[in-house]
Length: 206
Image (cartoon, rainbow, N blue to C red):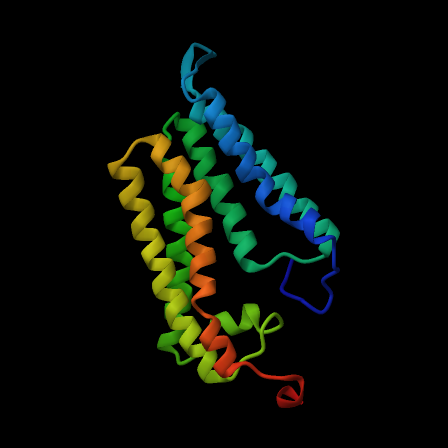
């Protein structure tokens, strides 16, 4: 499961999207259906949120394994996300405490933002190591994007903390399912000028 983009196999984009977003969509649907329910299991009461979280963990594992099987490759971001889903989700189920799972996005974005920040302190763009195959850029372009991504990830971590600590579980689920993807999409859209200004053509790369 190492980073070897040259060995990665191409799969149908629709299938890839389903595998990546399917567990999140199913989590949202499951939560909407079970959020008012309370289940008695082995003498202990579990809210619908905990039950849906328990189902989400194996779904995430299976979808990630399917992606690895089909592409022969998993990024470090995918691996880190899977580990935190299993660990924080498992804690929520085991301790019957939804707060651990709600903290998962915070830890993920702190991990990503922190890693990029360490690279910046060393004068390097770790973002380039992950995304260079997707969008070749001049070094200055990578440094600009890395600074922006670092700040963006840290802002998402703060936003997640503010939402889950200050608002209802319903609000957090909507934020996680819709708010975070929309924020990601909007952020990428605003990077168009950097990509145009510092993008490398095939001749430049040669």
